[in-house]
Length: 83
Image (cartoon, rainbow, N blue to C red; front, side, top):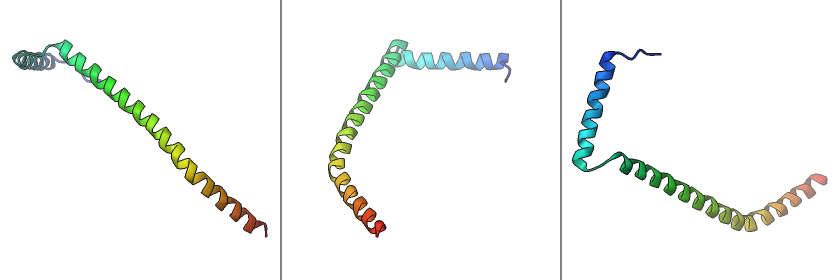
């Protein structure tokens, strides 16, 4: 595991200072960032749930066409192999 040196701590402090300054200039605070993260997660969950429910509908719709065709071909092949 790498050692945490004084130089690393100083670099982190400078990075935090600069990011904090930029955020202050832009009028952002940590609650804005956390709120945005929550909205992104909520959007992702809603989108995924919509995809799953839509996919289920498409699967059932396709099955109404594909399965009867597959069954016919399956029984035809079974009848040919029986001879």
